[in-house]
Image (cartoon, rainbow, N blue to C red; front, side):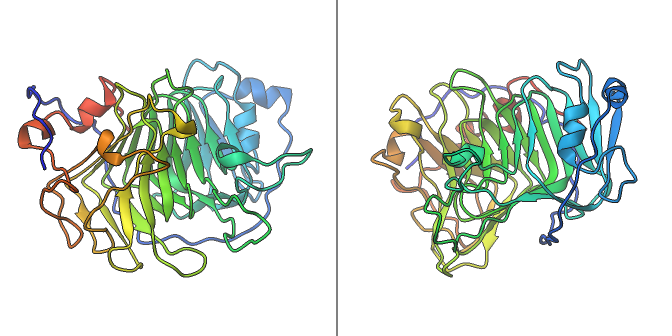
Length: 362
């Protein structure tokens, strides 16, 4: 079926972010990292650039130590330049530290890896468990954040029978005006949480030239997010089975959800085993209006012929799911189970429409 048409309007230019070649894979090396202690002098001097290097050749040996050195409510951009290596740590950029840029020093997203292995059900020191959002290897709560040329990984082993809640986030964003350019987000269940600070807050995210890997709801949240020119990689479950869901948006009513555009979705999994998405009404909130649009994207035969499905008693047909001019063995013609945008509607589903006047640039 087609969605009911809306009045077309003039297109606006897309944001100007350069695109590098798509990554072909990720490689992990696991090693501990030890922070040096920031001094009062280095905190005061934290302004333009802070260098992180595992071998001690930078200002700090951990990413979190560099973030800690950025003054609260800093008024201008601070670049945390990270030399190649595997940084086994969790990182949090709090809401009072905007304008931070995490940048790998090479052009390859594989040369810098920030990795940890917390899951939702992992016990916390002092009691309780981390929960899904708390499991994130890297958590970004500040506005105007950028990451380039590095990968975020959660390497929790889903085969761990001692932990029931296996959601394990590699990267969580909860701010507005977030740029993720030439990055990797690698995990299994709930890999990339694109969120906002609260249901009434806008969280705009621009993802460009990314490698995003997982199996169950591995791109999820309530952000208004564009995923452009990215490789979405489907992987099998820990028991070797194929099956899962790419997206689980939890969009607030009246907001934009997820826009996948100019990308490709594939993986070494069974044919017709993955859904494109399902509606996540977080906490059973019926007021939410989840949205995912997949357009101008190559879909492998891993995608089901009926690519959307229900979730927790909520029908996807009551929310906003559609495709437009997708290609590949996993694409299909319009039907009641596969809604397609009309050309007129597609004119209102461009990158600039999603970002609402914000034009990220490198």
